[in-house]
Image 1 (tube, rainbow, N blue to C red):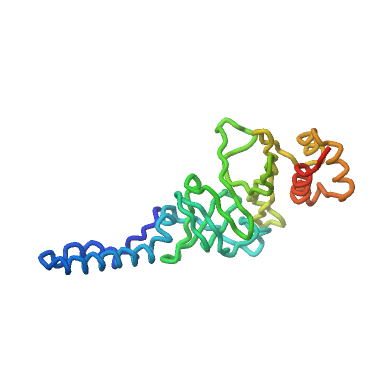
Image 2 (cartoon, helix red, strand yellow):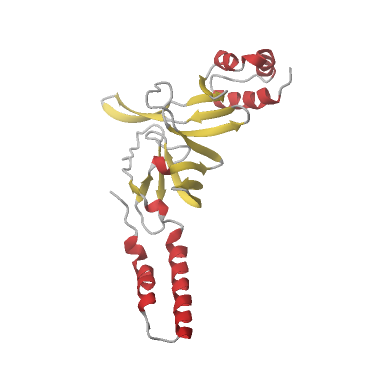
Length: 248
């Protein structure tokens, strides 16, 4: 279902259509007045609708049906709207209400001219930012079974980069004769080094990728008591910052 915004823009749009034809036989001075009125009307139209024009290019979002027995949520960090930034269809928008559905890897917004939630087209989204987290859409070859095209948060940007793919799996679990929905984390962390992406999670996998400074990294991990079991995303972020600043 394509979102139609013309109903909301119609009154202002009609001004733009009618003005050029009003008083065609009037004087040159009158023509200047008409031109000014047209430009004012045009500006009013884009002030009212221009900030959302590209965002109407999406589909109606199919919402989850929540239940009190649900464990977790299908969104990144919060199920409440968060004002964020998004670069969509070549245009940057700020203070836009956003949700990030990490089950289906979809960015959701809600327009000021409608109460309908809109699922934005992923291919038109270059990046978006919510709560200080910036996500980029990375594209990989379809036959790449190790890593799929989608949105990745950029955690560290230097000569090497660190990305995390936040994702959840929606599982139906039956307990005591009742079905419950559980949203389970399936997050994956990648180091992008020398134009290659490496999946990392454990201490050994990180050391293998950063083997050129292995001893220094080992010492850094030991001195800072980094936790790869429960806090591996934060731990690897700290390691990357140290790795690029460390001198042999």
